[in-house]
Image 1 (cartoon, rainbow, N blue to C red):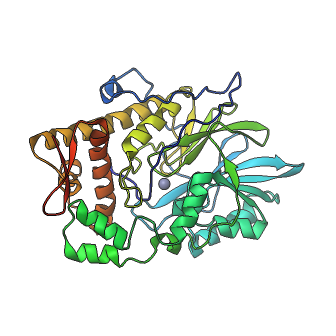
Image 2: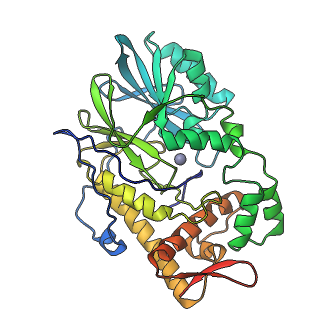
Image 3: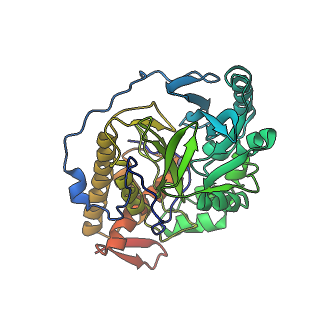
Length: 388
Ligand SMILES: [Zn+2]
């Protein structure tokens, strides 16, 4: 599996539960041990009920009653994002709720113009929901919200993290990040210099974030177009990701928390240098594996799929395998994050990929460090290593 690009982590304590007779009681806060994660329980295979060809950019495809799939291009190796339009009615006004917006670019806006003109049936957008603050999800929200005088709905942590990121601390560049990378074993002076001198990558794709928002919380219920949608929080990939589940429609808009082919990036970042995002991510998966087998998962990247139980198990196995490799290495000799990259990623990485690989490597080291299985050493060469 390869990992997708972009930011990350934190954990927050429980929030009041709002359950009804038909919603899934998402109460578990305990994380299964790694060994039970690979139990291999029989789960239906992954299937693609809408085929394996994505909807064309600038067009929509109906995937459930009143729910439409949109795809926008991205200028990365991960070259697209899926967005979702849902027929809605707010205060007797018929229109649309939009989930996620694409990055801020002329190409994205041109495609939005096409969709506004051809696919909204002359009904207005009524609100924008952002699953999280990463640029491909939030970048264009300010433009759409200003143009249609809409409210932005997202979690509090994501909203404030987005404003924080606009001020430059994105985890991608600057002195904080270059010192962080050096302390974990990256000693390529040219790369450290580039990282240290990077301008604000976030603001290049998210030039503005709306000044106000409507806060979404875990287990909150939202009525969209006459159907209830349950907010499901997720951690480890971003500060407080919100996925949306409709039991009426058997549909989960999973954002970046569940993707069919690639594993979500789960990284330690310089701005939260002692976090444990693998723990946070795996704990978040416990919510998703409670959802019914017939749930269609609508991911931000890839194709809508069935087989949520199988996919959650695959992700657990993926991280369990990486964790086992990392622990074995630490038992043989102390390892820094840069050492662990060679174990986890068995190919050459460029500077862009190294930034994320360092974060992922450290995330897997931190799992064992937080568990007490390895100790953290500050060596004479100023590199932080983990060993027994
Ligand atoms: Zn993301």
